[in-house]
Length: 280
Image (tube, rainbow, N blue to C red; front, side, top):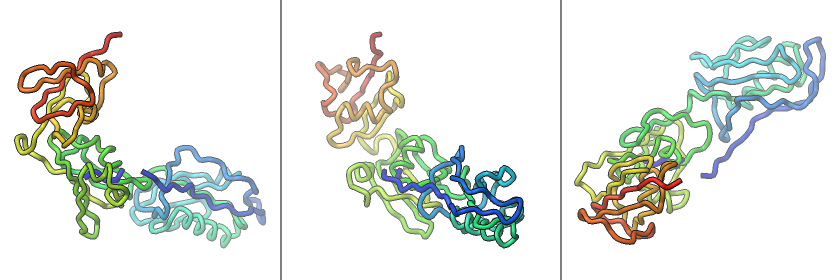
């Protein structure tokens, strides 16, 4: 399943700013919020969860600038406010909650509170089956299915051209690589936290394949898709290495080398593609 997956992403930098005014020696100064290093983009409506790392700060207050991890009970420990619940809130919602506690305690009036997510542990998708790098992939923004497949290293040599997507509610969807590439947004949906993506194995002999080796990044055998050109076959093999040359591509069909091979030539089942080194 080539979850979006994977390309227009809605990203949002979440800041809560309000005019600061002192009513005690701890009052925050009124100034723009500084950029926070290590921040990562957030999707609209991201909800904080257990294990996420956040940086909480008030501009101009070195004594209120801390990075913490959300604990298993859903809380974080912060200066002045001590324990406060973070899970179930958006970063902006947590900013509001912290600001309210600071004002209620008499420490600040209308404080500028910044909450930035610096590490994601609670939002991830599971990628299984015939991809080159299966496992858990954190999602810190909106990824389409195709993008997730790409982040998992792409479909392996024995992988199916169909990707299965199972939602947390049990809904099951299937998309082919061609659909994701050419079918528009509906054929390449956004993945959601908790989704499971699976690429089935197709045994050798169950489908027509071509073979590619030499100066390509992912040599091996791959399925022949209708209308696949030699140029497309090179891309399916991971593209040329730094030593590879498009002028040194040979194709063998039924054990015989083809003459005058061009990159727009159509690949057939059983073809063997050899990519040689370029001259420096």
